[in-house]
Length: 299
Image 1 (cartoon, helix red, strand yellow):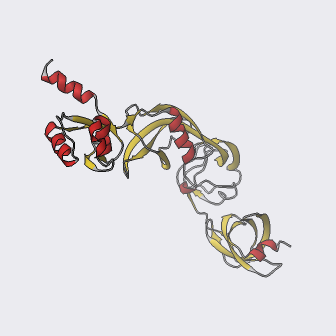
Image 2 (image 1 turned 30 degrees about the vertical axis):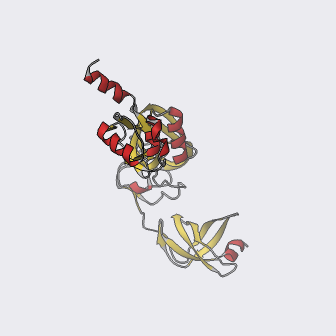
Image 3 (image 1 turned 90 degrees about the vertical axis):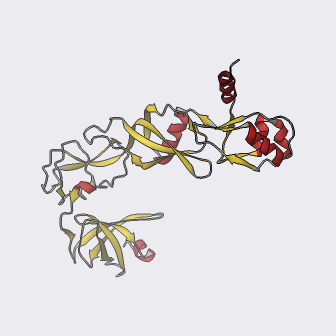
């Protein structure tokens, strides 16, 4: 048998490691004589995932002397423990990143990856064209291994989530001020991106579209300009209160004015107490912070 063949057979029998270092315990797996050494004693650095670390006969001899192991030594091969991604593991990590969403895997990374927890972040989920939310997109995730190291993985996926979105019922030209007849709130399946979407159709009224919007498309808040002051001082406004177990609406008088998204001060006309809420539409606001007594003093 030739030297090249012998060398190839030696490399084929690599011992898997799972940490940043090759330890004496790993040596003992490949050569039981090293079981006399402390298992957590360092023998050298582990290889990068997908590569191998070969300890030569000379290195093994020096390690033998260090750990009081006698006899003849041969080179030993170590490689990082790797495995193929499983669909079930990928889907579980995606559902943990975006609870309630539905995912259809089209393709996943085919290369082997190191062992470790797999994670996806919603921020790294690519977006499909707004007109074709059902298209598959690439989602990059990572596997954490060996005390802080990361290995990048990817998957091609179709994603959707049940919810409500404000949708254009007719084409809206860029720069046009949106009216109540232009939009409506619809329930359905939507792409689960991290954009801020309008909670009500009223929130969109009075704003201007930065770009043209096709009929049937949901409206992103980031693609709209504020429509000027929606609440003026002295206005009577319907304020939604959602504080823990408290869910109600009250009418309050605006002490200050504001545009969409602004924090405005209101006074409860029954109790006289002042609280703060954020403008969500024309004559509408939602609680930012609220004195508990004011919240409960509905009448």
